[in-house]
Image (spheres, rainbow, N blue to C red):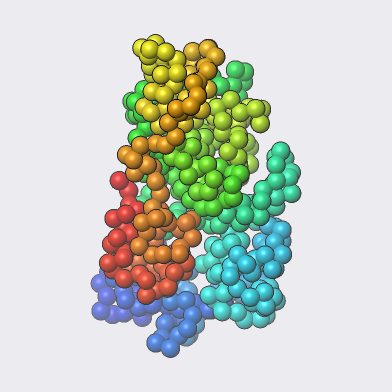
Length: 472
């Protein structure tokens, strides 16, 4: 950060605040700044806009803007009369949303959208921020600067909703969930940058692999073994928690949301960031299915070249079946093979089959030992051992163990604040709470990010969130 004079640091952060740099002073300052639609000012007791911590305002807008705000009473953030109306309209059109649909998603009156999309009209900053989230816009920079690639994502979602390129159409529920998921992924990464938590996951360790050649499933098996090797995992041991592997070991943003009954999950790129969105409706309520979903999406994210991800890859439950007849796309065949081989390495499966009393017993043991569904184990055993597997009826176990559910389950049911969108519960909430505790963001910002009210974020609640959702 460019060096500034001690006198200017005193003006912005207070003469009694320790630190030789703007960043150090901001971390120690209790001053706040307040943002409206077009301006930033030093906060006063009567200010009604969005209050920001000094470190947050510095990170978002730079020292020069803060100095201007203090010296002149306010600093201009939005310099074009057409903004933020133009950006809001453009992003809404990219997604193909009618104003009425956006109003339902943002929980604001349609008249507020009309005002916000009218150049020169002034709206509440709170309304503008509520509109930004379902449009996958970084609310901090709404109207202030361009947001690379965000509009492209909206166009892609609209194309999928119209049935382009895919053998199915995305439902309005899925489109909204994925747009919000993209926002969560991008904001999580930006908060982690403020916290100076560099990503644990180093993309360079996983060079994209464009080999989808026949037999495609063997390439999936190969990449699964390579993944275990790169992560220093036992080549044949069960993976205790796919959730922890994705979120903790690889530090990949993982968003849980409701996408309707058909869609299992997605890999999504927003700006430079990639993450995984997993549905908590439908078959993913079964832990075994959810593990397969996470492994499948991980295969896409780690190994697919960018041209195959195309900023967004969405998968249905039917597509995640080990021998899915629904989709013959080699990209999906490889991801399925990767998922089952990552969860249940073929060599280990073969050993179980060779020592079992019979093939059905081996299938049950593979299911239990590796944490996959009986149907997935049945297909996998058949593929690995080149046999036709016929299972007896009835008697197939229906549920995972309590221990496996405990390691895989998300935290929605145990979260200390009720009625939050599931998309913000999990690692995202940990990052928000950590940033608030460290005075990197304000109470207003934390409440807005978590879609709650400031009074719900007392220190006891913050400590609970940090303990519940932090890295293990």
